Each structure stands twice: as structure tokens, then as C-alpha cells.
Length: 181
Image 1: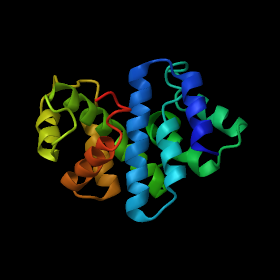
Image 2 (image 1 turned 135 degrees about the vertical axis):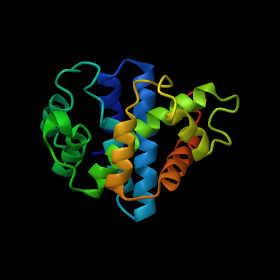
Image 3 (image 1 turned 45 degrees about the vertical axis):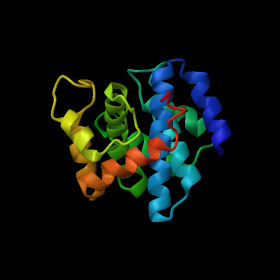
Image 4 (image 1 turned 30 degrees about the vertical axis):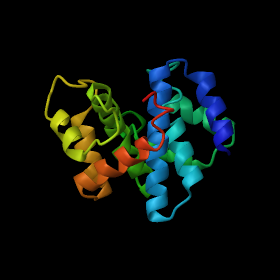
């Protein structure tokens, strides 16, 4: 299991640039959390990179179809369980590991940070948690982003909201060029 292999898999299954960028953003957030707690940054990054790789081709079977593909390719079970757990409502797989809880907590929030960056003149540069929280309160802004999932994810992870948002902003700032900013 390597990032290069995961990236090849992502590009094989995902044609939409916006979905690829989302997966890169989630990868950066997962790596930042792994660094913060001293866990396996490569593994956590791969989880973020591949969490939605099956969504474009199999939206009605996501993430179960992806788990089958990952098992066939020999990915570790903890990686597969974390990916299944980020869509617990559909998969039925409970988020037990720190990696699974983190994936759930960063997924939708990365979408909100990305949407916020798109409307700011300085994009990700100088963004604060307050900028993101302000947009979270606007129901029409990035309407597809689940505020409920963001709130629930932060609660499950057990971290302060501002600290969580700041970590994700910082992680995404580190790959701003790859994200198109």
C-alpha cells in the first residue's frame, strides 16, 4: 500500500476534478491529524485519498463497492473499515477507530473550507475558523455540505471546534496549489 498506488486508483476511478481535489484535501487533513497524534501518516493519508474513490462510478453503492475493490487489491482491513465508517448510515459499519472518527470529522468540513476559499479574494491564505463558521451558518452556502455531519464529527472526535477547523485550514494551505488556489 503506497500513496502512488492509491493515487493511481483514485485517478482510474475519478474523472471529476472537483472530486479529486476534495480527496486531496481530505488526505491533507488526515495526514495532519496523524502527525498531531503520532500515528501512521501514510496510512491515514491513503484513507483520506481513497475515501470517495468509488463515488463517481458507483454512487448508489458507495462506499461498499469501494471496500470490495480495496479488499481485492489487498488493502488493510482498518483502512477499509475507516472508509466504510465515514458513511456509516449506508454501510452500517460503526466508527470505532480514531482513524475512522477522524475521517468522518474532516470529510464534510474539507468541503466547507474549500467552498469558503472559493469566495475569498485571498482564497486559503489568511483564512480563520471564524470565516468558515460564518459560512456554516448560511444555509444556502455550500448547501450540499452537511452541517449535521460536521457537528457530529467534531463531537465524536472530541476536539474543540476552532482547533479542528484551524488544523484543516492549515493542512489545506499546505497543498493550496494542488487544490487550485
